[in-house]
Image (tube, rainbow, N blue to C red; front, side, top):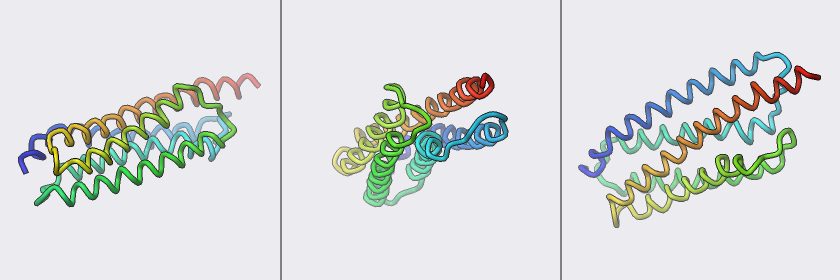
Length: 176
C-alpha cells in the first residue's frame, strides 16, 4: 500500500512523541502525588488528567495502526471508525465529568482544549475513516489532522494541569 507507505515517517514521529509524552505524564503525576499540601480530587483527575493520557494513547495506537502492513484499506478503516467512535463516546463522558466535578470551574480555554478539540478530532477520524476507500489521499490527511489534534490538545492539557497543580493549588494550600 503505497498510500500508507508515504505516511510512515509522519506516524513514526507522532507515535514516538505520543509514547514519550505518556511516559512523561506518568512521571509528572507521580511527582505531583508526592507534593505536600496538594489535595487530589478523583472527580477532577477523571475529568482533566485521565483524558490527556487517553488522547496520547489513541495517537500512539493510530500511529501503530497506520504503520502496520495492511493488505487492504477496509480493515484499517473499520478499526479507525471504531477508535473514533469510542473516542467520541469517551469525550461525551469527559464533558459530563467536567461539568459535574466541583474542585475547579472550567474556563473557556478548558472547554476548547479538553472538550471541543478532542471531539472535533475524534469526529474527523470517523469521517476520514469512512471516506478512506473513496478518497484515500484526502482521508489520510484527515486522519493525520485528527491525530495531531489529539496530540496538541494532550500537550496543552498536560502543561495546563501541571501549571495549575504546581502554582495555583500549591499556593492556595500553602497560604492557608
